Image 1 (tube, rainbow, N blue to C red):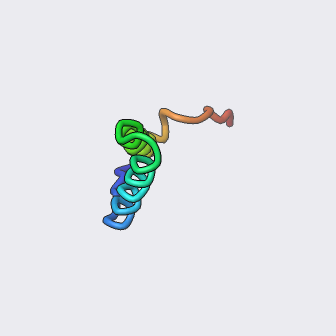
Image 2: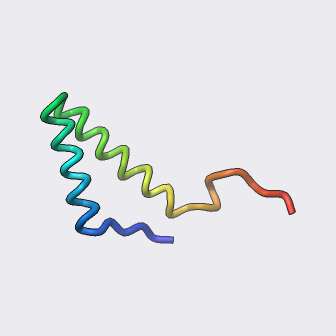
Length: 55
């Protein structure tokens, strides 16, 4: 599966990053944005995550 970020999702991520940067630290904001992107990319490899079901 391929994960695509829509323009709206990217805009929202930028809003979240800006919010964190204004209230905390730009470095923390960048780290959180990168973490969110990394987490969504794990969706591209579903067989490698989760628990194996017995049949």
